[in-house]
Image (cartoon, rainbow, N blue to C red; front, side, top):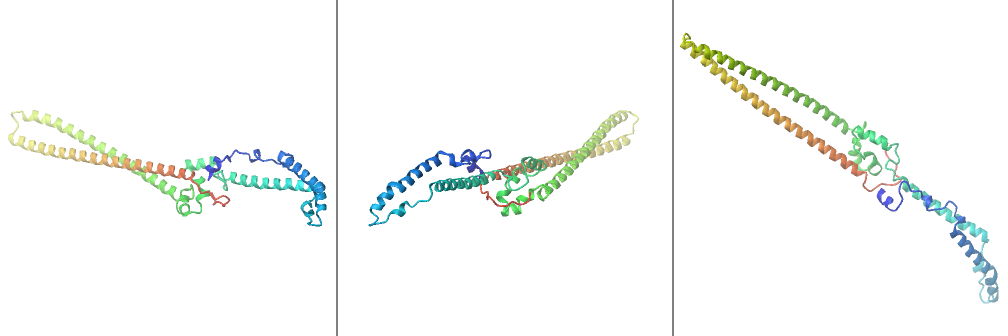
Length: 282
């Protein structure tokens, strides 16, 4: 609705009185009308009446020149034109007032900007005049209002859940790191013990049976360390995959939310504004 009005030249800054006059009585059109009126009045009261008298016994044409007072006719003509101008300019100014997307509310561009910063979709306050009686508005759009709608509260809950989940992810990463550090330390200690054992077993005084028992214990320890290492590796891969999936889901959610906000902004440019319809509270 707003764009076609602007396209015909009736923009917000347009002064309709640039195209009309507050007093038409001094305009050339009025002067020309009065000049022709004077000529007609003089003809009717002079030559015409003389001619009508000559044929009056056949047909009475004098009513054709029964005119009112010339000055009264002229002033009534000016008044009629001035009244029509007043009606036209009023209608144009009423139409012009609806170029304001916040007409009928106490909303301003600054107030809208503050609400957008709080999470409200941009352009929502500009479509209320168009959609506030539609099912789309009453069952969906209005729930995006700051402080009154339920959708922003849901998003806040989601944000809190995401923050909590991110905290859990950081804890798991820290725990996994500590587990890897402990395993690396155990492996280092085992290698040092193995070195000392090899030196001790090389002594000819070491008993063969004792040597075999120690070697079996070391082999068992190696197996357990390997199993623990594999477990930590598996856990690390699972954690990395979970973090990746979480980040992808988060990016998708943010992207779709931004797209929906852009779509909401586009609504403010759609046609269908019902001029003169009262608006809902902001």
